[in-house]
Image (cartoon, protein in one colour):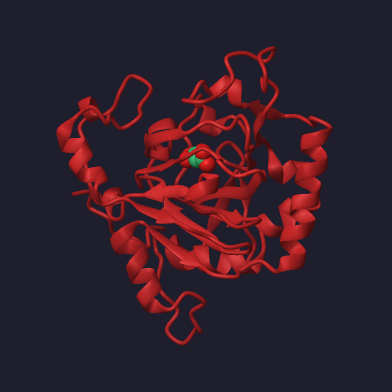
Length: 272
Ligand SMILES: O=C(O)CCC(=O)C(=O)O
């Protein structure tokens, strides 16, 4: 088991009389399971405005973008020239893209809860997630089982992502699947394939994945999840594009390793 001792910032002391925004039971749930969902954290109006910006940027292909074909996941178009080849998977650099995303990513709704999960002094990573995930009905791909930290390089494997559903997310339109408590398990290197996806050809891995649950969300719900949590997602089999704004945070004493992708863009300190 991974020796999780969240909250994780050095010197973090819970404030005795502060009114918790996540009930203590929810903080405890996060520590045990590696995720927690806060329902209705963003208003309908806020979600609609963010979605409208995302739709506009998608239609005009405003970069930086990640296309489905670039990830080469099951179901993605084979090239930019193939049918559906210009299907966008992520509108990247959301923080720099529009003040609506900036305001949300640094909002008290998020920072107050993240402070309970991580500690008092936090930064937003511009290098990871920091995007609007777009899941197109016709040409979206499935994402295999993985832990985000396998692709990231920090002093400590202690980061939390906040996934805001800008509309309903369920099995049909490719919601996330999670394996509760997997953030506490030390998996071996050979349990992953060469692209660092958790192998489904191994019986022992399939047994672990039997514990999976669908992270079904409604508009405005936020899924907070630990960077070691095993997760995956399906394709969008509905007729409507799914949008989610996703940002990742870490303590300000947990630095990205120099020279890595994680250190390639400056982090944004969170006030308060
Ligand atoms: O396809 C998806 O929605 C999942 C994306 C994901 O798991 C990730 O970016 O880490």
